[in-house]
Image: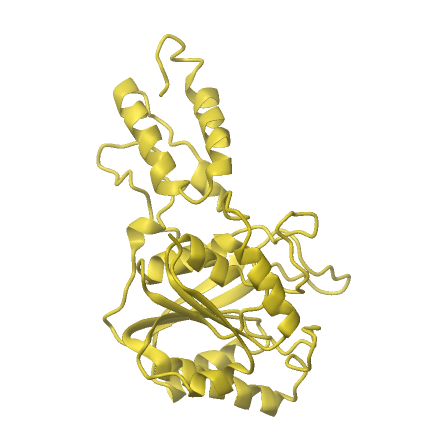
Length: 302
Protein backbone atom coordinates (compact mmCIF):
# COMPACT_ATOMS: atom_id res chain seq x y z
CA UNK A 1 0.00 0.00 0.00
CA UNK A 2 1.33 3.44 -0.93
CA UNK A 3 2.26 5.85 1.82
CA UNK A 4 0.79 9.35 1.81
CA UNK A 5 1.88 11.62 -1.03
CA UNK A 6 0.86 15.27 -0.63
CA UNK A 7 1.27 17.71 -3.53
CA UNK A 8 0.98 21.40 -2.58
CA UNK A 9 0.59 24.28 -5.00
CA UNK A 10 2.37 27.48 -4.06
CA UNK A 11 5.64 29.22 -3.27
CA UNK A 12 7.88 26.81 -1.38
CA UNK A 13 9.24 29.43 1.01
CA UNK A 14 5.77 30.58 2.07
CA UNK A 15 4.61 26.98 2.51
CA UNK A 16 7.68 25.81 4.41
CA UNK A 17 7.37 28.75 6.81
CA UNK A 18 4.06 27.26 7.96
CA UNK A 19 5.52 23.79 8.59
CA UNK A 20 6.77 22.60 11.98
CA UNK A 21 10.44 22.36 12.96
CA UNK A 22 12.22 18.99 12.81
CA UNK A 23 9.47 17.11 10.97
CA UNK A 24 11.25 16.06 7.74
CA UNK A 25 13.57 13.07 7.41
CA UNK A 26 14.93 13.88 3.97
CA UNK A 27 14.97 16.87 1.63
CA UNK A 28 15.78 15.98 -1.96
CA UNK A 29 15.20 18.54 -4.68
CA UNK A 30 16.18 19.98 -8.05
CA UNK A 31 15.71 23.76 -7.77
CA UNK A 32 15.97 26.24 -10.64
CA UNK A 33 19.60 26.89 -11.66
CA UNK A 34 18.90 30.52 -12.70
CA UNK A 35 19.60 29.72 -16.36
CA UNK A 36 16.39 31.29 -17.74
CA UNK A 37 14.65 27.95 -18.29
CA UNK A 38 10.94 28.23 -19.02
CA UNK A 39 9.07 26.85 -16.01
CA UNK A 40 5.96 28.85 -16.82
CA UNK A 41 7.00 31.70 -14.49
CA UNK A 42 10.03 33.91 -13.84
CA UNK A 43 11.53 31.70 -11.11
CA UNK A 44 14.63 30.93 -13.20
CA UNK A 45 15.45 34.45 -14.36
CA UNK A 46 16.71 36.50 -11.40
CA UNK A 47 19.64 38.80 -10.81
CA UNK A 48 22.58 37.10 -9.13
CA UNK A 49 21.86 38.83 -5.83
CA UNK A 50 18.17 37.95 -5.92
CA UNK A 51 18.92 34.33 -6.77
CA UNK A 52 21.39 33.97 -3.92
CA UNK A 53 18.95 35.58 -1.47
CA UNK A 54 16.23 33.24 -2.70
CA UNK A 55 18.53 30.21 -2.36
CA UNK A 56 19.57 31.21 1.14
CA UNK A 57 15.96 31.66 2.21
CA UNK A 58 14.59 28.35 0.95
CA UNK A 59 17.64 26.40 2.18
CA UNK A 60 17.26 28.01 5.61
CA UNK A 61 13.63 26.90 5.80
CA UNK A 62 14.50 23.39 4.59
CA UNK A 63 17.22 23.12 7.24
CA UNK A 64 14.81 24.19 9.96
CA UNK A 65 12.37 21.48 8.91
CA UNK A 66 14.95 18.70 8.90
CA UNK A 67 15.08 16.37 11.87
CA UNK A 68 18.46 16.22 13.68
CA UNK A 69 19.08 12.93 11.84
CA UNK A 70 17.99 14.37 8.50
CA UNK A 71 19.79 14.68 5.16
CA UNK A 72 19.54 17.18 2.32
CA UNK A 73 20.37 16.57 -1.36
CA UNK A 74 20.28 19.50 -3.74
CA UNK A 75 20.98 19.49 -7.48
CA UNK A 76 22.87 22.47 -8.84
CA UNK A 77 24.65 23.62 -11.98
CA UNK A 78 28.28 24.70 -12.03
CA UNK A 79 27.53 28.44 -12.07
CA UNK A 80 26.08 28.57 -8.56
CA UNK A 81 27.16 25.37 -6.83
CA UNK A 82 30.00 26.98 -4.89
CA UNK A 83 27.55 29.56 -3.51
CA UNK A 84 25.11 26.84 -2.48
CA UNK A 85 27.93 24.94 -0.78
CA UNK A 86 28.88 28.07 1.16
CA UNK A 87 25.30 28.69 2.27
CA UNK A 88 24.88 25.10 3.47
CA UNK A 89 28.18 24.76 5.31
CA UNK A 90 29.13 28.25 6.45
CA UNK A 91 25.78 29.99 6.86
CA UNK A 92 23.51 27.13 7.96
CA UNK A 93 26.04 24.91 9.72
CA UNK A 94 25.16 21.68 7.94
CA UNK A 95 27.76 18.92 7.66
CA UNK A 96 29.16 18.16 4.23
CA UNK A 97 29.02 14.50 3.25
CA UNK A 98 29.32 14.04 -0.52
CA UNK A 99 29.66 15.91 -3.80
CA UNK A 100 27.96 13.66 -6.34
CA UNK A 101 28.47 14.02 -10.08
CA UNK A 102 25.70 12.83 -12.37
CA UNK A 103 27.28 12.00 -15.72
CA UNK A 104 24.90 11.73 -18.65
CA UNK A 105 25.43 10.78 -22.29
CA UNK A 106 23.70 13.66 -24.05
CA UNK A 107 23.55 17.35 -23.33
CA UNK A 108 23.97 20.79 -24.80
CA UNK A 109 26.11 20.84 -27.94
CA UNK A 110 28.89 23.45 -28.20
CA UNK A 111 31.20 24.33 -31.08
CA UNK A 112 33.50 26.53 -29.00
CA UNK A 113 34.41 24.90 -25.72
CA UNK A 114 33.51 21.50 -24.28
CA UNK A 115 29.90 20.35 -24.15
CA UNK A 116 28.61 19.88 -20.58
CA UNK A 117 27.87 16.28 -19.66
CA UNK A 118 27.16 16.41 -15.94
CA UNK A 119 25.14 17.95 -13.14
CA UNK A 120 26.19 17.99 -9.50
CA UNK A 121 24.34 17.02 -6.34
CA UNK A 122 25.41 18.20 -2.88
CA UNK A 123 24.68 15.93 0.09
CA UNK A 124 24.69 17.52 3.54
CA UNK A 125 23.45 16.22 6.89
CA UNK A 126 22.13 18.07 9.93
CA UNK A 127 24.32 16.12 12.34
CA UNK A 128 26.81 13.27 12.43
CA UNK A 129 23.96 10.85 13.20
CA UNK A 130 22.04 10.26 9.99
CA UNK A 131 20.42 7.50 7.94
CA UNK A 132 22.52 5.84 5.26
CA UNK A 133 21.26 2.46 3.99
CA UNK A 134 24.26 1.26 2.00
CA UNK A 135 22.81 -2.22 1.45
CA UNK A 136 19.85 -0.70 -0.38
CA UNK A 137 21.99 1.05 -3.00
CA UNK A 138 24.93 -1.26 -3.59
CA UNK A 139 26.00 -2.26 -7.10
CA UNK A 140 27.00 -5.79 -8.19
CA UNK A 141 30.61 -6.88 -7.82
CA UNK A 142 32.66 -7.44 -10.98
CA UNK A 143 33.96 -10.82 -9.75
CA UNK A 144 32.75 -13.57 -7.46
CA UNK A 145 35.20 -14.07 -4.61
CA UNK A 146 34.46 -15.80 -1.34
CA UNK A 147 36.06 -12.85 0.48
CA UNK A 148 33.93 -10.28 -1.38
CA UNK A 149 30.65 -8.93 -0.08
CA UNK A 150 28.43 -10.25 -2.85
CA UNK A 151 25.63 -8.01 -1.62
CA UNK A 152 27.52 -5.47 -3.68
CA UNK A 153 29.85 -2.47 -3.55
CA UNK A 154 29.39 1.21 -2.77
CA UNK A 155 28.28 2.95 -6.00
CA UNK A 156 30.70 5.83 -5.47
CA UNK A 157 30.03 9.51 -6.10
CA UNK A 158 30.03 9.48 -9.92
CA UNK A 159 26.66 8.26 -11.18
CA UNK A 160 25.84 7.43 -14.79
CA UNK A 161 22.20 7.58 -15.76
CA UNK A 162 20.77 8.48 -19.13
CA UNK A 163 18.58 11.55 -19.52
CA UNK A 164 14.84 10.99 -19.79
CA UNK A 165 14.72 11.35 -23.57
CA UNK A 166 11.79 12.96 -25.35
CA UNK A 167 10.92 9.65 -27.02
CA UNK A 168 10.42 7.83 -23.68
CA UNK A 169 6.90 7.03 -22.56
CA UNK A 170 7.54 8.59 -19.16
CA UNK A 171 8.73 11.92 -20.56
CA UNK A 172 6.66 14.79 -19.15
CA UNK A 173 6.18 18.34 -20.43
CA UNK A 174 8.91 19.73 -18.20
CA UNK A 175 12.26 21.20 -19.33
CA UNK A 176 14.50 19.57 -16.70
CA UNK A 177 12.91 16.22 -15.84
CA UNK A 178 15.38 13.97 -14.02
CA UNK A 179 15.54 10.16 -14.27
CA UNK A 180 13.80 8.24 -11.51
CA UNK A 181 16.88 6.14 -10.71
CA UNK A 182 18.69 9.25 -9.46
CA UNK A 183 16.00 9.87 -6.87
CA UNK A 184 15.67 6.15 -6.17
CA UNK A 185 19.30 5.98 -5.03
CA UNK A 186 19.08 9.09 -2.82
CA UNK A 187 15.73 8.18 -1.27
CA UNK A 188 16.64 4.56 -0.57
CA UNK A 189 20.01 5.57 0.88
CA UNK A 190 18.88 8.39 3.15
CA UNK A 191 15.38 7.48 4.34
CA UNK A 192 13.45 4.48 5.61
CA UNK A 193 10.01 3.12 4.84
CA UNK A 194 7.43 5.46 6.36
CA UNK A 195 9.81 8.44 6.57
CA UNK A 196 8.80 11.89 5.34
CA UNK A 197 10.55 13.18 2.21
CA UNK A 198 10.19 16.82 1.15
CA UNK A 199 10.77 18.18 -2.35
CA UNK A 200 10.30 21.98 -2.37
CA UNK A 201 10.61 22.11 -6.19
CA UNK A 202 8.49 19.15 -7.21
CA UNK A 203 8.48 19.89 -10.96
CA UNK A 204 7.38 16.85 -12.95
CA UNK A 205 7.01 14.75 -9.79
CA UNK A 206 9.94 12.36 -10.10
CA UNK A 207 10.73 12.45 -6.37
CA UNK A 208 7.11 11.85 -5.43
CA UNK A 209 6.78 8.91 -7.84
CA UNK A 210 9.82 7.30 -6.23
CA UNK A 211 8.45 7.95 -2.73
CA UNK A 212 5.15 6.40 -3.75
CA UNK A 213 6.76 3.19 -4.96
CA UNK A 214 9.31 2.86 -2.13
CA UNK A 215 6.71 3.40 0.62
CA UNK A 216 7.86 6.80 1.82
CA UNK A 217 5.58 9.68 2.75
CA UNK A 218 6.15 12.50 0.26
CA UNK A 219 5.49 16.24 0.36
CA UNK A 220 5.97 17.93 -2.99
CA UNK A 221 5.67 21.70 -3.43
CA UNK A 222 5.30 23.25 -6.87
CA UNK A 223 4.72 26.84 -8.01
CA UNK A 224 3.37 26.05 -11.49
CA UNK A 225 -0.17 24.65 -11.33
CA UNK A 226 0.19 22.93 -14.71
CA UNK A 227 2.94 20.78 -13.22
CA UNK A 228 0.67 19.85 -10.31
CA UNK A 229 -1.69 18.25 -12.82
CA UNK A 230 1.23 16.40 -14.43
CA UNK A 231 2.38 15.06 -11.07
CA UNK A 232 -1.09 13.84 -10.08
CA UNK A 233 -1.53 12.09 -13.42
CA UNK A 234 1.88 10.49 -13.06
CA UNK A 235 1.11 9.21 -9.57
CA UNK A 236 -2.07 7.59 -10.89
CA UNK A 237 -0.24 5.52 -13.50
CA UNK A 238 0.35 1.78 -12.92
CA UNK A 239 3.93 0.95 -11.97
CA UNK A 240 6.09 -1.28 -14.18
CA UNK A 241 9.53 -0.17 -13.01
CA UNK A 242 11.48 3.07 -12.75
CA UNK A 243 12.29 4.78 -16.04
CA UNK A 244 16.09 4.43 -15.80
CA UNK A 245 18.80 2.27 -14.25
CA UNK A 246 22.50 2.32 -13.48
CA UNK A 247 23.71 -0.17 -16.10
CA UNK A 248 26.07 -1.68 -13.53
CA UNK A 249 23.01 -3.14 -11.82
CA UNK A 250 22.63 -5.60 -14.69
CA UNK A 251 26.23 -6.80 -14.86
CA UNK A 252 26.93 -10.47 -14.14
CA UNK A 253 29.95 -11.17 -11.91
CA UNK A 254 32.76 -13.21 -13.44
CA UNK A 255 33.89 -16.51 -11.91
CA UNK A 256 30.49 -17.76 -10.77
CA UNK A 257 31.71 -21.21 -11.67
CA UNK A 258 30.07 -23.28 -8.96
CA UNK A 259 26.52 -24.19 -10.01
CA UNK A 260 25.04 -24.02 -6.50
CA UNK A 261 26.63 -20.65 -5.77
CA UNK A 262 25.62 -19.32 -9.17
CA UNK A 263 21.97 -20.31 -8.75
CA UNK A 264 21.79 -18.78 -5.28
CA UNK A 265 23.50 -15.59 -6.43
CA UNK A 266 21.23 -15.09 -9.44
CA UNK A 267 18.11 -15.21 -7.28
CA UNK A 268 19.70 -12.80 -4.82
CA UNK A 269 20.81 -10.46 -7.61
CA UNK A 270 17.25 -9.98 -8.85
CA UNK A 271 16.02 -9.15 -5.34
CA UNK A 272 19.00 -6.99 -4.36
CA UNK A 273 19.53 -4.93 -7.49
CA UNK A 274 16.48 -5.17 -9.76
CA UNK A 275 13.63 -4.91 -7.27
CA UNK A 276 12.29 -1.69 -8.79
CA UNK A 277 13.36 -2.59 -12.34
CA UNK A 278 11.45 -5.73 -13.30
CA UNK A 279 11.75 -4.94 -17.01
CA UNK A 280 15.52 -5.55 -16.79
CA UNK A 281 15.31 -9.05 -15.31
CA UNK A 282 15.19 -10.76 -18.70
CA UNK A 283 18.19 -8.75 -19.88
CA UNK A 284 20.11 -9.84 -16.80
CA UNK A 285 19.18 -13.51 -17.22
CA UNK A 286 20.14 -13.38 -20.90
CA UNK A 287 23.53 -12.02 -19.84
CA UNK A 288 23.93 -14.91 -17.42
CA UNK A 289 23.22 -17.39 -20.22
CA UNK A 290 25.65 -15.66 -22.57
CA UNK A 291 28.40 -15.71 -19.97
CA UNK A 292 27.98 -19.19 -18.53
CA UNK A 293 25.98 -21.45 -20.85
CA UNK A 294 28.83 -22.30 -23.26
CA UNK A 295 31.18 -23.66 -20.62
CA UNK A 296 28.48 -25.16 -18.46
CA UNK A 297 25.90 -26.37 -20.97
CA UNK A 298 25.14 -29.48 -18.95
CA UNK A 299 24.30 -27.53 -15.82
CA UNK A 300 21.16 -25.63 -14.97
CA UNK A 301 21.95 -21.95 -14.70
CA UNK A 302 19.15 -21.08 -12.32
